[in-house]
Image (cartoon, rainbow, N blue to C red; front, top):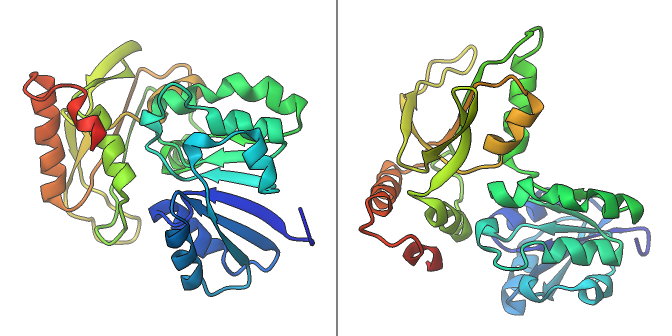
Length: 281
């Protein structure tokens, strides 16, 4: 912390989710936000749109080249990785995590990749030794799911199954990296719990329909959800050991996009589309 301001480095700071986070923090006068991305020009343009009391500093910063020295040079107290797709971080997926721990900066991310979030525990001991916080998956999946399940489970002695889904508003921005993340596992096997034990399903091939009925309001139209590979499938069975089944889906809009993803997944499933060709989108 310098000049009494908390310094937050937001990787992907002018992107869909990083930009939204910056907008939400813009009115906090005790913050200095480092809006980081590969393009200095885009970072500068985004900073000019922020009208708040927080200081916004544009910064050219390539996540793939992050190391302890580069993190330390920013003097960031907290680093937020809002880039992604976390499913495609390659041979060094935890590069930023390791750099933050070495530099003494707290780390959190908006990861929705099941493997990425499940593997973050390996840094617990070293993070505690360095008095650094390391949090992965601080996003809709799995944080909201776990919170809802805890709320609904009050007073229950046993939970047998969890079925859940997220249906984003058609007016909500969906970043290109979200589409890339979904496309990277469309049609692939995902690990989940069925019949009281480990099993697999096919992402975006399996679908279920639910009618969402918010309390005190008219039910929403019946929505189709498709199985997604998210951390919830791995983490929630550990929180509720007696779980026999878990299924988590997404119901994206517009419907034509959802249908397109289902078709892509089925083509991957039957081998018409190679498993790796759509990951480079």
